[in-house]
Image 1 (tube, one colour):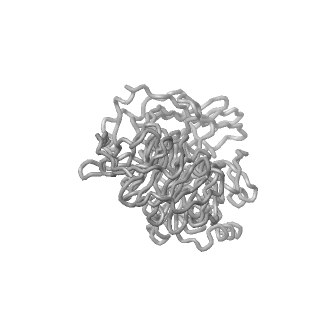
Image 2: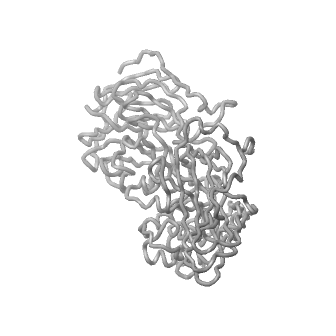
Image 3: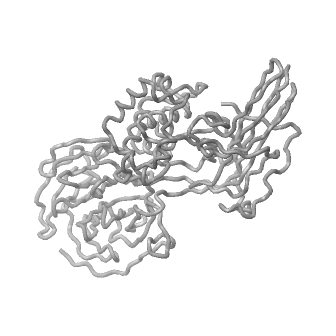
Length: 567
């Protein structure tokens, strides 16, 4: 055993991310402190509750590191030639060999290997320990075993095939993915991924939990990073994109009659977490009035007396926006009970309607089977989410059928996924609603003809959390978790609704109603257009106070009057 010599520390305090008084808040996953790793080829990482321990895979060494300044305090020869996973169990350091599958228990006081077991699979890349259970990450699975003899207690699939290392924070299991550069917080009993955070470097080689922080050693940048997990706000924004988004509604009247008494109601997008409006909305025609529906959704109303046969009426709005991906950090044990949800939210967002039919015997029996005696709001929502994923396959067949029909059929559109989730949540007493949007379809400049809708569920301690079961309908546990608590930066959200709106009905973006003089063949177009913004385009950006807004009701784009969308 050798005593390490104090070395020069390359400590990086990332500006604006420290959770110190007066400095500001950090988002989950932000790097709070970084310093040099003690070796060139770091692999596993562990803690004894006071210090950090890092393994060097190539040199077969183990380093004891001071977490305050990165000083190397001691070094040992590893108990195997290719050490990877490390954890502490009952005061002993446990080290795995990723190639042989051997798992060695080392007494650091004597340097003697006291015990050896074999991994249930051929490799053992990561280790974690909690309450008498040893977790072993292999090529395909995570095994739970008895540390004394390797008896298997259970197993589940990895979140992704490229997962590398493990840690246990006393409640949850943490898993790193070295290809996707992500960190997963999972339920140690089932392996279900609950939270997803970005890894701080390009190759997370070891993780451990110390003093309320997740620590990571990176193989490529050769740094040890201390990550913020718990702070305000309870979500993380990333990948901001700036775009000009235009919405077009058009009515084509092929006749022979005329369209009369036309009213078009257009949902007005607002600023939200992850959605910043850089300009005011620019409509192509004057607004007749602005109204709010029972769900507090703002709508711009346009009226037209007549659209003659053989004419086309249209309306557009455009806005410049900065849109960011958002990911909520959800701690299930902190979401309380249904009784912790404000009464006005419970009353408003658990009501029934013609598109939900939550009193249906089929819906009642289904939700009872899914939820059972579960009382935790997160797990109620997550069980319903998992049921939707397992039951439905995506198919856009037209129409928005009620959830009972959709669930029995086994397929549906994004709206039908959403209605089914909302219905089952409300039947379980959990408030749920939906959001609708205009979508960027892959390229920075694109056209959206389909739009997209997903649900929101109210969780105490978190508020309204996005839930997109359509997105979560995937194969890997990590990809299944992406739809719960996260949205990408592809959406301009126009609509937040609970259903049955006075102005939008069950639709989103817009809704039109009109009469005809006799028979008319009428078609409506609804399109979204995306264009990337040049860096200088946001000179007239506006804040939440609406200052410096450009004129909204600009010019009428066409000589024809506006019209609206039907579901």
